[in-house]
Image (cartoon, rainbow, N blue to C red; front, side):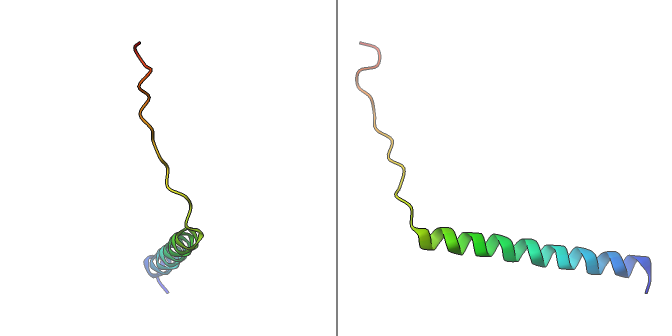
Length: 47
């Protein structure tokens, strides 16, 4: 095997792992369904 081919395999495996990790995190967070962040306007500022 050439050195370039080995690096290609390593990069491909890393991309697969990173993509899988990102996808799993996205699905877990989507299932957790956290409450939305509500930003309230404060009318007392400046008075």
